Length: 244
Image 1: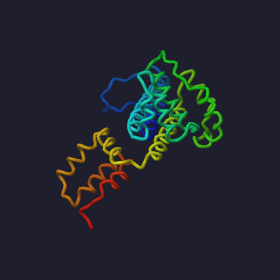
Image 2: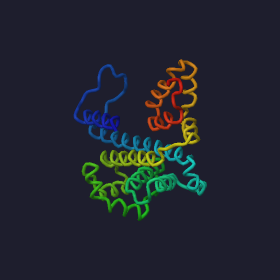
Image 3: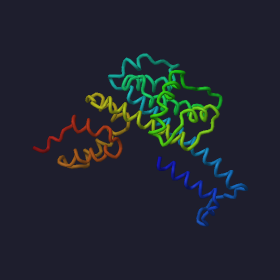
Image 4: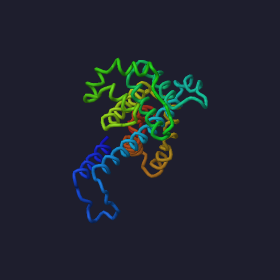
């Protein structure tokens, strides 16, 4: 969110006449600064939307590999969409009535429409009703976000900063809630996630370069930076045996 807001602030400066620094070696001389800034703002919003949707889907695929989600993923086939996979995993962890899941699903559908202009990906009637039923809570929790405006902006393909920032926030909350619901990882779960995120190699490197008394702390510092959600499970399953 901070990166998105920084880009928007910069584009606002462009719109208001901020000059290109002499040290910035690029070609830039728009005829209409306001139009250029607003076009770029649309580009930034869509780029961030796609980036977050991709990260969310990677999270869903990772979580789906955990043993508790085996019945869910066993029902998937080549025709199961990203949105359906998100809904299945989230419903297993949180229940099917959580409006955050509908918001995260809308983010994925919007990504599909941006990447594939002919896409008609859309929420189900039940998902739309879920968002509208929670409109009061959503307006209060997301700085006055109007569900009706959000849905209309999606249909006409005109994302606003509030739309995208709110959907990102809903997606982050969805991921955190799913992660929390499946937080008590087994050793098998942890090994899979460490391998999936490329962290096993980093742990091996730490273990070969660090003295036994400092290995646990070094690994935990790395996880705190790279995958904070795995710190508790690693601490529990790999207790430091070098200390009494």
